[in-house]
Length: 176
View 1 (cartoon, one colour):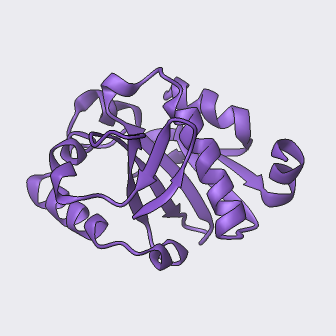
View 2 (view 1 turned 90 degrees about the vertical axis):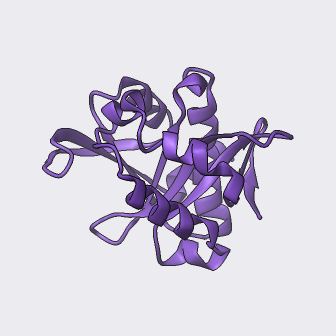
């Protein structure tokens, strides 16, 4: 099931064959360092992966969802598009990519596509994103599309996060 596509990418539901690369996104120290997050255990990976296998489009409205990012016409999982809900019950976007796909513009392309999906398909009024300020690549991406509104210490991840937001009216003015 395809959620949306961009010029080079498709965002779609995961399949059982994606498990190895999915696990890499939760265990690779270089990927996790930027979030920052500790590596998942095998049981945590299995639980998270199995939940992602059975997602429906309607799940986007009321739960956190992870969909695969794939280059068009290819089957190898390159990253995850994360449709999240923050502690204020606001829609939040997130993404992560396997290291060999960093620096190729996929984060920018995915962010733009996710914002378009949130605003056009889901008709939400505002989208947020949180980023570890040490994650320079993601900060640059979010600065292109969204407005920083606060910084706070994230106790769970032991880092300083910056919250971004974008309201639909501002997106309409910027991208249409």
